Length: 238
Length: 115
Ligand SMILES: Nc1nc2c(ncn2[C@@H]2O[C@H](COP(=O)(O)OP(=O)(O)O)[C@@H](O)[C@H]2O)c(=O)[nH]1
Ligand SMILES: [Mg+2]
Ligand SMILES: [Zn+2]
Image (cartoon, rainbow over all chains, first blue to last red; front, side, top):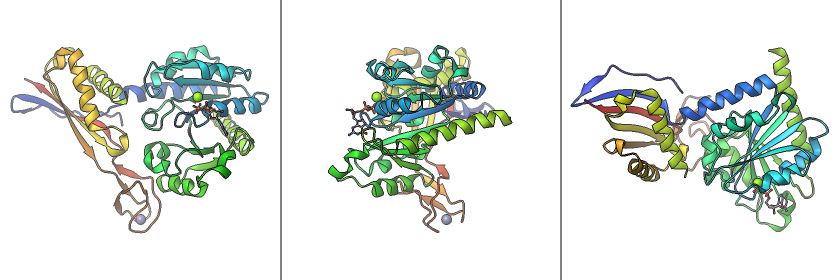
C-alpha cells in the first residue's frame, strides 16, 4: 500500500497536479513494520487486545498472567486515556506492566508503542500484550505490529455489535465472548453474536470466557501457548 | 479525536513526501476513504479546519474527500457484491468472503500545487 505512483507534473489550469497513491496512515504503518521486525528478532509474540471500555480486558490480563507466568515470560503494555490504574492492577500478579497514557487520544498508535519498547528486555519476553484503549472504532485502523488481534465482546453488550463495528471484527483473529458467567441473567445470545461476527469475518475464532468462573480460560491459555510455540518454531526454521 | 490524528498523519506524510518549497504552494489534497475506514468525512473536514487555523501556511489548501462504498469479490465465483448491512456474503453463490475490493481505502490519491 505504500507504493507511490507519481505522474508527470501535468499542468492543469494554473495548478500542478500529482497523482499519488499514499496510505493516510503510511507513517503509522512504517513504524508498525519496525516493531514487527523487532518482535521477530526477539521471538516475542505480540497480541493487541481491543474491546469497548469495561469489557474485561485488564481482568483477563490478570487471569492470563496468573495462569501463564510459570510457563513463560509475559508482559503487558496498557493504553489508557488518563489513568495509571490498569498497569498497577496487572503488576499485582507479579509480571511487568507499563502504562501508556494517551492524553485523550482514543487509540494507540505504533509510534507510542515503539517509544516504550526499550523499557522491555524483549529477548527474555515470550508473550507481550498490548491492552488497547477501550473503544471498537479508532483502534481498528492502527496496526501496532501485532501478530494477532483479539477482541473482547462482553455479554453485557449488545449481541449485534460485530456488525456495528465491522472493521474491528474483520481485522481480528479471535473474539472472546467475555463475562460468560453473567449469561443466565442477560438477554445476550452467544449464537447470535457468533453468527453476527462470522457474517463479517467467517474465519474469526471464538472462545467463551469468564474471569469469575474461569470458564474458557484454559482454552484461551492453550491457544496462546500454541501461538507462542508457532512463533518460536518459525524462528528456528528460518 | 480520531480524525485529528488522521489529519496530522496526512500532513506529516505530505511533508515527508514533498519539499518545503512545494508544500508552500499546496492547493488541494484529494483523499479517498472507504466506509470501512471509520473516517467520517464531516468530522475530517472539521479537524482539517482546526488544523488550518493553527497552521496559517495551509489556509489556501483545500481538502477534498471522496467516500467509497463497500464491495467484495467472491473467491469462488468471482462475482462482485455490494456489501449491505455488513454481511460479507456473496450475493451470487452465498459463500462468505473477506476479499474486500473497495471500501477500505484511506488514500491520498491526488495532490495539487499552485504554479
Ligand atoms: N461478571 C464478570 N465481571 C467481570 C469479568 N471480567 C471483568 N469483570 C468486571 O468488569 C469491570 C471492568 O473490567 P476491566 O477488566 O477493568 O475492563 P477493561 O476496561 O476492558 O479493562 C470490572 O468491574 C470487572 O470486575 C467477568 O468475567 N465476569
Ligand atoms: Mg483496562
Ligand atoms: Zn460467489
